[in-house]
Image 1 (cartoon, rainbow, N blue to C red):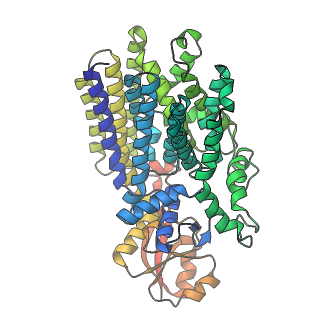
Image 2 (cartoon, rainbow, N blue to C red):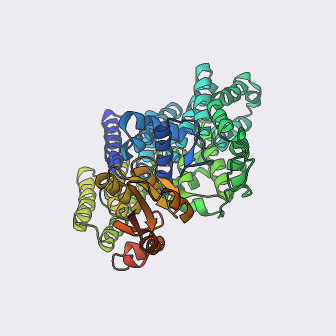
Image 3 (cartoon, helix red, strand yellow):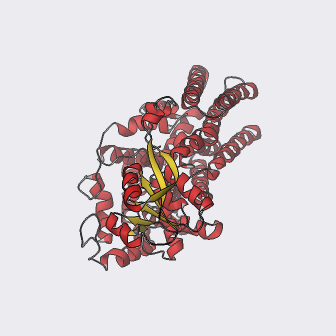
Length: 546
């Protein structure tokens, strides 16, 4: 790879990182992001980093590390949306660095740079910088573990320790199922290449022992919060073991759909999820996969490619067979997808290169048309600016990058992602978040009634209000509970419209402010269309009892 191409890839990576950073200054989205942010906030407010609480009650679902990382950021930067999002953003960059390192070691620096670029510019990674959950952390930790175990496989022992540390971190984010993409690829690689003795080598058994040692903080906190207190009511029953949930119910229980948290499976779910989640690279990726089925296309690839393919394949299959499926799960194997796509892209030439250049140009135009239509129908303020920016980015990409070559294809496709991110962070999410009433109410209350004692009446999912309101809001699940606190000075209640009439007649409640609400992660045509939006909006209120 010449220095000119190397510089181009690094500039494109820097551009997509800089544009993605805009999302750090946006709001925290419901439900999951706001839920996790409020849990970390409670940790800091209570100065309790062992027990997880939601709405004042014990909470058992995810392990602790996501919340520890956010809480640490809160301690440094204050309890803000920026502080919540920053650790995930930085760990996403660390994940890209590990992708570069592994692809560079196995293939070449060019493949490493292209792989990192594809990963950082894929749609679901861009979305995840705004809607921060746990998956970016898992992605980085699992891939870091794969990289270090690869180096450990070559004989460098300290990498075994590092790999086990990162594998343990992934477990403390999601659970033990993350070991499947970490170890599954290596085991099948050893079997296929007849390296059976690897399975008996002490260093790999030591790796397992080290993982168990490194996850002790998680096991300890679960034992303290739940196993020591069988009287606690969790999932509607007592005698719930946090350790059993961690090792079985949260993982195998979801897979077999017999745990306390259930879902509905569709074996094709992640096939069509990948189509949009891996935009604008998904068509190239699926072509690359079909290309690998031809033996002649695999002959000259290093044998180590096997554990990259297999770790993605078995994880994808596991997700597809599971009854509990969510779109953001696919993030965990996007690093492998990026490397597979980069390998295919790097070898494109002649007619194939012309075809995919045309395909990506058509895709760019379609995306601009769709986003422009969305901007007009939604009724963005100054929607014409959003449309003009999208068109300008497309034109600039054609003016700067010319010719039928790989570098042009990569650059123009990256500019599609840059346009997408500017649209999402600068126009779409700010417009949509106006209908996240909990956030709007929490911010308004903090600004206008800074001494108010925030509370919630008869509504279970006010996670963004929990995060944005001052302190830790009190929850009233009945009017009997409200009666015990109604005489408190400066008590302000956040409540749905269904409770407003009773509050006015029986408690002489004064409405301080009303807010429009929509479940913004489940968009529908009626909500997107400004003319029909009022039909699907709910209303929430901040009220004060006199």
